[in-house]
Length: 272
Picture 1: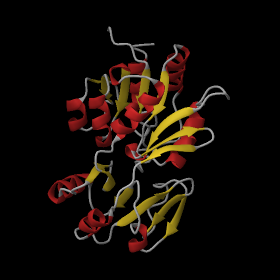
Picture 2 (picture 1 turned 90 degrees about the vertical axis):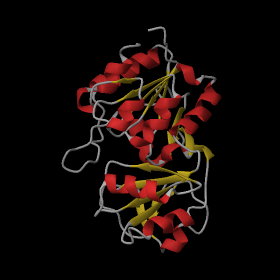
Picture 3 (picture 1 turned 90 degrees about the horizontal axis):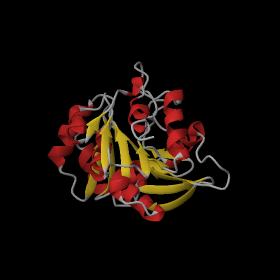
């Protein structure tokens, strides 16, 4: 118990927000227990940083739900797009963005799943897409764009979604392809996130911590997804949610209760 968090890094979907069983999408509501635990951490002088695969636009809504930042004179610091983008809020201002040439990786994946939908973030607006995603899966507008135009210039993140595959199918495919020069994350369904090589929530958090003067050993990170693995390994204490896949639990320092039982609050309350 000698560990004392100076910064708590929180995933959103499946950690702060509970996915609805009928759709898998998160209910945009933070439980009172989680909100109270965050309040206690803030009152103790701890930094709260959201770290998600969501776009900056999608994360601003969650910041409002949490009432972050608490005071008009403050700004929240946030890790978005699986670490490719960091920003401050309000107003939303991009602090850093890492981009890459995604053409080769995208075409390699589409050789195996030619009917997949592809999306590229359009900051502050939504996504440019080659075909529409199911309603509710993407934040903001969907701007129909030919595939070659989507990846004609460098991007910070690409989403590939195949409704006819499973997440396990995409895990196997990503391993087979190797995706050289690209980092990848598998979502809760057949959803593949492509990011610049070496970029993850951990790299984004490292940038935020440098700004705040906080070392990794003083970071408590909580998450439930495969895209949280690097973050949980990097932090001084990495905690997996109770419903996380086995490979996420295996690398975590501890496993808390599932999101439906306010697992994030249970862990935060250990320290505050």
